[in-house]
Length: 170
Image (cartoon, rainbow, N blue to C red):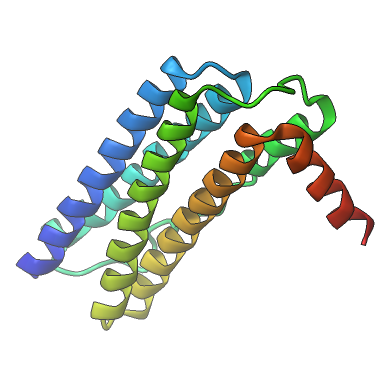
């Protein structure tokens, strides 16, 4: 069990670091799109942290997990930011390099989270715990894909919109 607690501590730290990074990046971002995206990602990392803390405390106290713990629910809020951007497309010029670098760094952070949660899911025998970490990994993959999409949007908003509109027409 000490290994599980250590892994959960690592997961909590990743979520804390992620939230702090997203808040800082959102505060420094030039484009309103990047500001909103980073703020939403910070909010989602905070939710992940609460869920991991809940599991950590239960495991520490009881030595096992309760099936009654709430699992993570995928959020559509990040995708809503893209939908609003599609409707407005105010930022016709490419973003500042600082926003692009922040997105790249965030993508690296999400890759680390995905690897950790995939490993934790693989290493557990409990189907409940496995499901929890698979869902966290799924959420982090969603963040990674949103950041990947954001990079395209911030690099060339008009091309991004054209690509999205063609997808919707097919």
